[in-house]
Amino acid sequence: MCIPVLAQVPDSGRWQELRFGADEVGERMEDRYIEQVVDLAAAGRLDADRALLHRLRYVSTELIAAAVELKPEAASWHWEVHLASGPEIDAVCLAGGKLLVGAEFVRRLALDDGELAVLLAHEVAHAIAEHSREFLSEAQLAYRPLVPVDVVMERLDSDLPLQLRMAGLARTQEREADQLGMVLAHRAGWPVSAMLSLYRKLADADGGASVSEPLIASHPSHAARISMSRGMARLLEP
Ligand SMILES: [Zn+2]
Image (tube, rainbow, N blue to C red):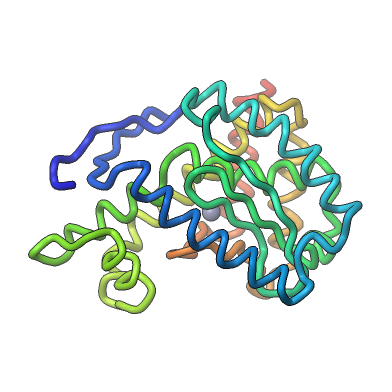
């Protein structure tokens, strides 16, 4: 647990120091996902909109194929896609490929398939870049003696100074997920126009409609995301 492994983020090549194992983090994230899905099902709020669930699964199939091209070990992940009714979930993808998308969020923004793909691609990018594993690894170093992954997760939920200390890495990861997500969406065959229009819709819808995620939520400003998506669009479709 204490000997860091160096890894590189797909596409960007940024180096990461990973102290916790992929399995260790994956298991914790799977537990969180199962808990959330079971709660939603018990409340009758899981996969209620069958038509939207069908669109979600159609769109995610190609994205997952693109993700596996960039990160071959993701082929053996147990990818799952579910839909949550209710306003509190926007979109998440936990380590190991566990996607959960908020039906109201998609309806509120009136996302077409391309925009939905870009939204999902951002989340899939977090997963294949192993952002949770990196984030937990970095957070572990905040206190001595070093503590196990469960304790780090608890501290991240409640420890404000730790959250502030982690803000820089959180921002780096969000920018990276935007860029890697656009690469994934492009590889899955979606036009760059879908990327630009998603970030415009997010900006127009705000009041605060940033995508909420586990552990952290510190996306770049809407202006920065729109200008990033324009830059990426020129790179991807010159
Ligand atoms: Zn994100």
